[in-house]
Image (cartoon, rainbow, N blue to C red; front, top):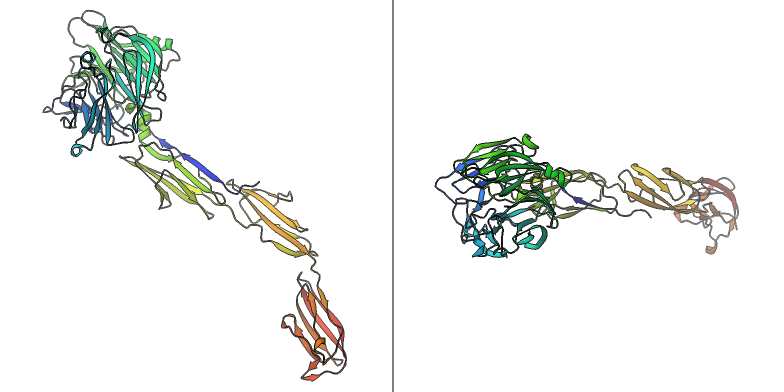
Length: 639
């Protein structure tokens, strides 16, 4: 069976490239005082400090911010109590959202996947406040178009879980679109909520690790809680630091399951955790109470092959005993969009900086008191951690590179192209040359000519657009009749040469078994040639050949009677295409002449008079259907 139709279905994957200036949701950091950081997005470039002493918001421990993904300008921030616009003013209905400014990782803000109008705010209440209000973990929803574009809270304080240990972190799903929000709650449970385009679509519980105050809240003690958790940017790890120990877990960013706990340390008063941009290094801060224990900044190498190696990879980057005051007490630690990690200390107006966090040990270039601030701050904003992942930047900086080679449409075929870009694509246009072909996610292209065409895909999000072109995308190589029309031939010829007229054939096979471009046919029958060109298109054509008896036949009467209309002289032929007849009398006088198409008969009259009875001679020349030419001489008796 030979191919009659080829349908090429090509899934176009968007190719990405690294560029930290891509999406900028984490580029503005507002702190508890009247200043903010503005990151440019350039790797290792420190932020610009924007100071506004007329605005003061007491974020204390639990700020969270979200910036415009295109410009990096601050959109909203929250201290767990209220939600503020870019000017620091509480948005409509944005007060009392169920949190507390002393919750270690209280709120986290992000846009609903695939929607630039709706933002979700997850809030973890302060653990001590949970005894009376029982806010626990709740959800608040913002419509950015409300209140004439300033933003408006549509709903708030929707309880998701009644108890919280203050730790709240978020990361993208493996599909790089949906978002997991994870918290540690009563007992040994991690809870992960999956937020998709439709809202919260799944809740996953993981019973993993040591129990924390199973009888909480009646069993509450300061040594047990609060705690901090943090996702790695790539979504593969989650670290937890408590007042008893520090753990590392595996996280399945496809299923939301937390598993495989690794006890890193049993140190008291763990504070915060963060990962390097590559997710290969983990950093922890440990603080100390006055006169006991030791404050520390720790690094762990997660590229080690097993849990023992990870634990043994610990490097103490800085440590000292805490003596009397809170001075120099480690607190928060956070990865920034510039790839650096900033270390916050209690009652310090300068930050420590880990300049190259992906390097091992002291090569990470940690500098205490490296970055001066106009006011003291102890906590960085809580973000979706995958905003800081290089692959997330790649995801948004699409180059619209179509992962396919130049392609072919064969006979009667079509090219079905499907753009599998994520839902962040705001618009899509397919171009055929300079003409718009379609704007849908998939497009079908048909060609009825031999030649080269160009298809271009344009895609855009709300910030930018990109394009890529498939050059030489379509070459139609099929000729519907390439060995000729059906033919009738005379059987006395020396065979018929049948030739395949295609010139771009990679291989061919005749029904006779021949592989040559031409065959010689001697018998009646149906002859088929099947071909494949260098594009891989298969074609076939058929010709019918009939050999017939083509010998010329003429019947010429040898006598006829004049004055008798039923006995006129005429020539009868078969397989003759033309002839010329001449009749002469005994003296050589031409008395009658006719051609095949004249439809004339001789009635024995010459020059308007009846010829004499007697013998006459004829001479006829002819051409047969086979092309043969001949002549014939004979006598006719006129009676």
